[in-house]
Length: 353
Image (cartoon, rainbow, N blue to C red; front, side, top):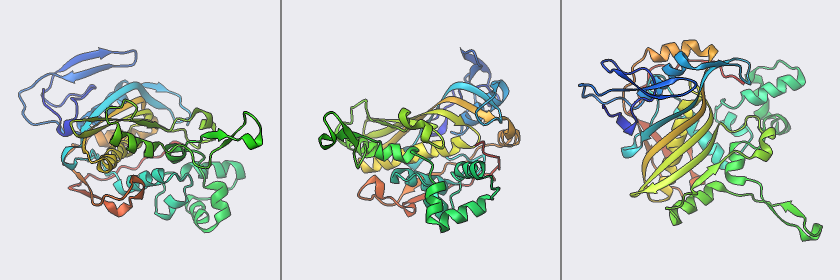
């Protein structure tokens, strides 16, 4: 069987490359998955091909479902992709441009524990604005534009506090998960919230360094008690890590994946975080494994799907981390550089809020 570059597994879904015959691999209630049989071709599959095959499979065979947003999706349950990070490889999509600096800025925002969009907007990052803007329009009846809303977020501290916060989303749970300590002064058996919550990322770094054989090297954003206070419950919800042969491997379970818009950022984020952790722990980066729960394409993304599937992936971009700060929390955007990335043009598509 032809091997995928970046260590990617052979395509898990229908849509074998030219010259390949299909073999049914597994049956589910949603769709048949297929793998290509061996061929005489020697050229390796591009790491992105497994993503394009999954996109084609969902668009062709996915179940049409009514979803929370009202837009509608084609969806399957369960998918897996693997990518090798050796030699600074990074799984950026090449069939459309992924704005990787936006993804890095978002990751640094998560690691800061921040939950207000103001720091992102100040850096020209708009990917989280739709949710507080939608709430503002619904609750005030004011049809303000995104540009006007973001200008007020930057200019008015009170407005930013009242309308820019997303609730206890990702960063809050990653580095400041609420914990409670005894409060004997308040009464026997009573507790109060500690000033500093659980820092799952700091604990993870310590665990990788000092107990690399642990099967508890993970963190999650799925705080059941606080889901109803979040603008959006975590989609990329649980990360787990594994040390073997001097390499750090990372796995992400993503309960809900917008394959057209969200996945390109999510897989880059998993690779980025794995690289950052490996650097802090004196390890090489190994492979990353992405597992999707409800993996879907929105029905109003037909133009995106058709255009992207008509393109051929090419290239092998590299991610360089130029500095090792004292802690993983001290990185700045200038620490990161992507080389050899020559993607095809971006494809615009609406976000379902």
